[in-house]
Length: 152
Ligand SMILES: Nc1ncnc2c1ncn2[C@@H]1O[C@H](COP(=O)(O)OP(=O)(O)O)[C@@H](O)[C@H]1O
Ligand SMILES: [Mg+2]
Image 1 (cartoon, helix red, strand yellow):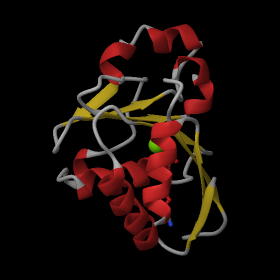
Image 2 (spheres, helix red, strand yellow; image 1 turned 135 degrees about the vertical axis):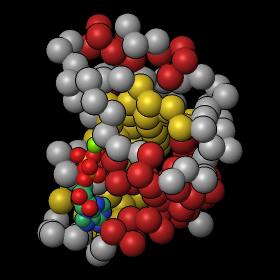
Image 3 (tube, helix red, strand yellow; image 1 turned 180 degrees about the vertical axis):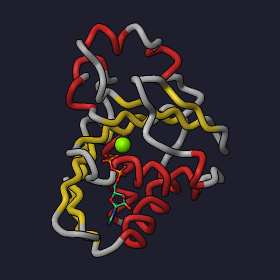
Image 4 (cartoon, helix red, strand yellow; image 1 turned 30 degrees about the vertical axis):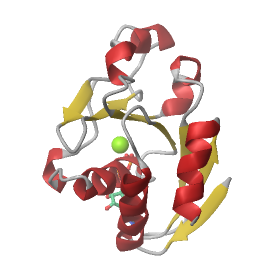
């Protein structure tokens, strides 16, 4: 586990850049935290570091999966509006978690059972107007490797 406090959005961006550098196709990032915690903002920062303009990345609505072409495809899904977990499975998880790209899932704790076993869990919480607390947890060997790179 690794924890970090961000004092500002630019600090969130710095971590986003570091995360981008550590990611490779097949990786899955589970984002957890209340509305406004910064889940989408972090995806923006990672995507930007991989060549996707900020304005392209926003919260996917109605559980649709967005795909941003970058060095490798970045897939972005939001489980917020799911009525039940089965809806998530219907979205086409083979593609979302395709080994050719990286997947980000917002509100991932609603679909824990459908996530690949080895994913990096990032729990965000609001600590102030521009401050956020982030807790990174690895759930397998590959996510542990990402964590090691982030800490190093
Ligand atoms: N340090 C920070 N990191 C991330 N977002 C921040 C930070 N400080 C302020 N914010 C603001 O918080 C909001 C986070 O929104 P968003 O990323 O859409 O949240 P979520 O996707 O978790 O609902 C944005 O308006 C962003 O500008
Ligand atoms: Mg969001």
